Image (tube, one colour):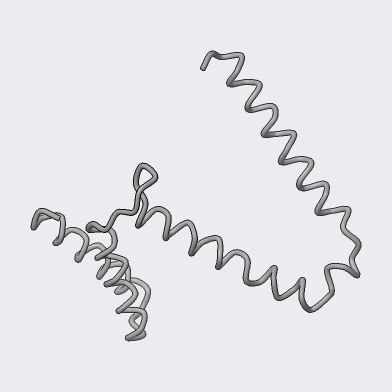
Length: 105
């Protein structure tokens, strides 16, 4: 990719972000006050974060992969089920992931 193509990509991205933001500002207020819209807007970030986490944990080069990352997420999920504090959840994920990698997984 040469410099011109990169700047074209940056310019298109900037224009797209601006138009998306403008579109959000042009939505009538009564449309945003509907209960379904409010519920969806509250749940959408959670769904996107879950999808990103799943893709980063179980995907590599377009294939399904079960490795140390999956073990770490499993440990974090178990800590969440046990209602552990956030730092304990993160520490459990890190320790289990490092342990599995150290054992050759």
